[in-house]
Image (cartoon, rainbow, N blue to C red; front, side, top):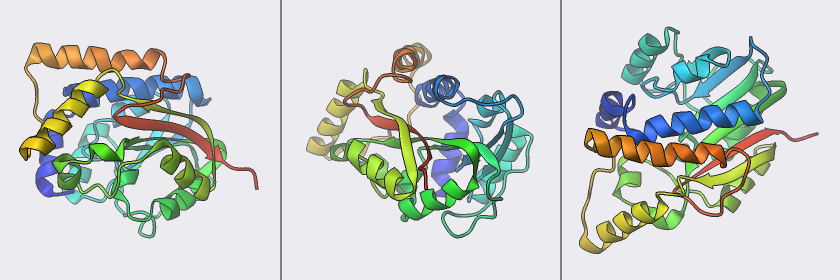
Length: 244
């Protein structure tokens, strides 16, 4: 992503409703779907500016990698760890069979070779380890936001299923999420396309409205961690290496 995107993330990702609610949903997903021992080894791939590290550190010992140097430095300060560099799938140095949990939160859509990257990460999981990831869904929602963030794709449920299968994974749970706000997001994207507006989806709402949006989005953690929703702005999945 461009330097300006990382700088903007650093400004808002601690409090912006989307980041905050996603952290709460992912934490609930891990608690329900990933059996972890207290000293579990966890890896976040694409840590960005480090806004997820504190949440993940509540589940075990966390390593992280991030290709952008400035974002990596900020993430290291936030998490109190040395965040490594490298680009998937070929430019990372990670031990095979080490991690009980690997997390990619809106990262896979940035990678050209998503299947090759998943194949590599499969080898990094310890026996019984699992992968948790989120990606943007609904390709028809493609907008200036995706272009600005250097997305390669938005996924359908089937496309994500196929990428994980080709990467050597068995899916334990998959669902759309950000479903309650889907009509609002869809309307905004349609209006933007009709009017040619190149709006900023990362704008920080007023405090009260931001709190309301976080409350609505985060409420999905009560069912999306075990049920499979048929539509939404994003997709989440929990997967484990396929037998053989």
